[in-house]
Image 1: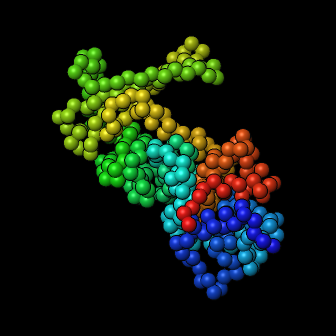
Image 2 (image 1 turned 120 degrees about the vertical axis):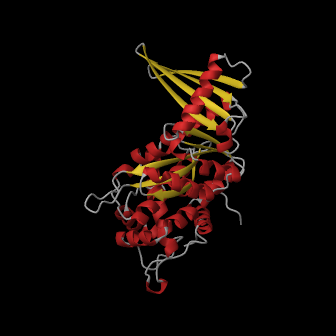
Image 3 (image 1 turned 180 degrees about the horizontal axis):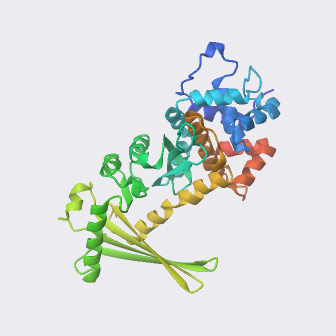
Length: 385
């Protein structure tokens, strides 16, 4: 049976992604081709598969269709085959290969705001052996909802070492990188600026001297009504779901002779972000602090700060609600990380497919029911010949 155009595009795109991925197995003794296993895995996750058994079920049910564009010399791979292969694949190499797909989309659609954030896979711990839950640090293109990279670490506290590794995998030139307080480190700032990118980083008590010094800068500027201080202010107000949220962003140029400007590469601006939520006539206030090398333009800095949290709703929430990631119990480190990377790819691709105005969970169901729509989801990126 001839391969149709959509299937050909899927195969070509996936081969482009995995061209440099090494097969960790002894190929002479293998019943299944690595490419076939990878193809079935990403298709099955798009159709609702959440674990190795689900992948095997998908392969069995869709075997006749899969054989129209895959070789599958050993028939449908078993759940043990999926588990073993993904447990052997080196996780950082696999993620780098897989996210070649979304990088192609990023180049096609643009977008220069990049959020770095981590998510813990809560059920991947093991009490008896002392195995801690796996933590995945992700690079998220905030403007178009694409995952561009992923690094695994054993717990959130290890983000400090994982983030520089992730940044080195990315082409940051011209981007603005946003990171929460865990990433507010001089080494991370160095890596960002070395690549020709800008930064907007949250500051909390994990940097007590920086936090105290900048608090003083803001208070002194406020007490003088910003006299002789380059500054800007931007305010937004929204009313929805029975509450009003007022967001105010003060951006201040830090004095050139301030000691912190010598410690943090190209540091220029302090941002104070204040949120006031009014509900049932009660006010709740929250104030956060950020540093940046960008000029003190409050509107654009405020937009970058707010878009950073898009990764929470656009990826983390979707992974838990539509992909049941928090319930996943895979404890093999490579396997869990590699499956997490596939989930993140599928979240990105489902966001790009906009003809069906439904959420990720509903789109996965349609993928399972309609192979034409399934291949359409994967037809969003164009790869260079």
